[in-house]
Image (cartoon, rainbow, N blue to C red; front, side, top):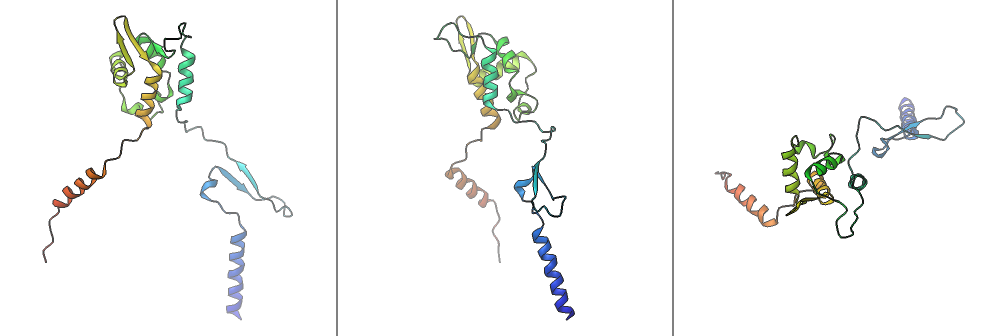
Length: 178
């Protein structure tokens, strides 16, 4: 009879566990509260305020909007509206991009402390067109380059390279002798 009572007590414990609200992995941003009145069987899901300690990831569209708002409208339809004609102007605009800001993944990879550092970075991007009348920097092309550097995955090695690496590595392992 005691064994039977123990089984019933365990079943009641299991049943009470099943009726408690479950928290799934996807529910991290919400908190589940139980009702305050015993007659109300509904659960309330309340949103938790976002933490201000995290910054948002820079987006291309927001940086492109900044770029377009900082440039004057082009008087000629043949000239690119996202082109500037001096490095100083290009640096002034690029320094407002979130992708080059303090919270970007690109910032630790770069050293942009002098004008020469900036000029080298612009030239590596392929956005600079040097003409007899001066320099033109395609800022949209430069912005795309920045986002590629920050977020693009490197290409995967080919199967041939992987097989050669495995063969080369297996040749260095000494064979077992029995």
